[in-house]
Structures are given as C-alpha cells and as structure tokens.
Image (tube, rainbow, N blue to C red):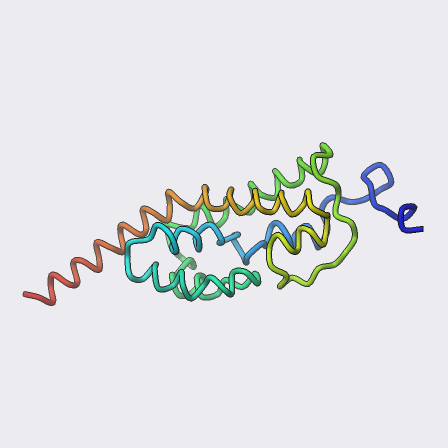
Length: 169
C-alpha cells in the first residue's frame, strides 16, 4: 500500500509545497543565512561578526536566525541585502529544477517540523538524495554570502580599529 501511495511527478506530486518552502527557501532561517554563519565562524576578523557567529550557530541549526537579523544586523544592511534576497531565489530555482528533472525525487509528503536541522530534514522529506541536496544548498549559501560578508567584515574591522585608535589618543 505504501508503494502505491508514493508520490511522483507523473502521478501528480507537486514540487512547490509548504515543505519545499520550509526545507529549502527558509532553510536555517530567512535568507538561508547558514553561509553567513559559516563565514563568521571561520573567516571573520571583526569582533562583532566573530561573537555573533558563535551566538548564532546553534539557533541556525534549528532554522532560527533572529540573532543575525537584528544583531548583525541584516535588516537594512546594504552590504548583506543582496545575498539575503538572492540566496533564497537561487536555491528555490535550483531545487525546483533538480526535482523537475528527476535528479532528486519529489518531496515524499512527510511534514518535518520547521525547526528540524538541515540534512536531517532533507533525509526525512526526501531520503538520502534530498539530504545530499540540502548539503549542496548549504555550500551554495556559503559561496553566495562569502564575498559580501568579507566586505562587511572589513568595514566592521576598520570601524573597530578606528575606535581603538581614537581611545588611545
């Protein structure tokens, strides 16, 4: 009975569903900010980005990114606005295409809670291929955010160094 109920595109499975949104477009929070978290943990030089990266790591694993949205801030930040809006669009398009062309299977109908960590949620909603695709999405997010985050980090570092120089005068 399970095999008869399996979803396939030929049998009318939809690609864009609530689970598609929760597990790809909103992966690790609005803007798919895991790439920014990875940058702050491994490449940031400014104290502000380093400290916020440590704070944001655990919440990001559960798709919560408010510490970044308001602490970094991402809201109204001209340095990070482009990747914040661009990353979900690229991920949505590429995920749609890999499902449409059969590279990964359509979502299996399981409704994983929105706080399920990445890769685990991919496995639950589509098996090992979907878990691998979510890993690729995390890498894509990192690649998209990296140049913008590096520029913002340099800006913050310059501000921090200027503040230290002014305090020592």
